Image 1: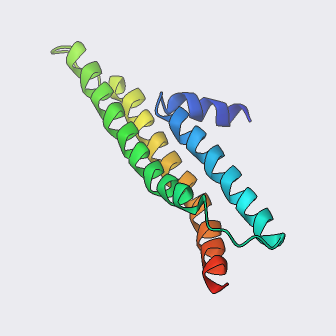
Image 2: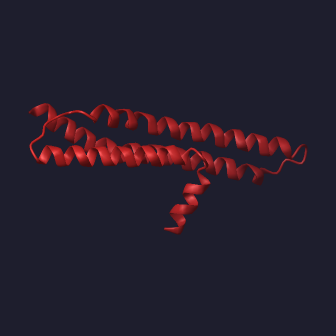
Length: 122
């Protein structure tokens, strides 16, 4: 759990919207699945989940861009004595947010497609 917290912090500020969208998407899918089991075949809310699935990787890419920008700022600030180790924090942020955006999207994608197909069959 501590390692997960460290990764979250290392990912920078873009991790917060990724987390918020993940919680919203999972909650929406869970409600839709419960509604489906109860016989309600309403597709409302599915467009929201679809949008979240699309937005999360984009947020991951945004985190990549901000992380790389941080890397260049750190290298620029070090002047002529550029230390390659100064780049590690920004690159780490870039990699963490990219992975988080992709994983969060994939976690929603498969249950979304299954539920969407089930709703379409009715």
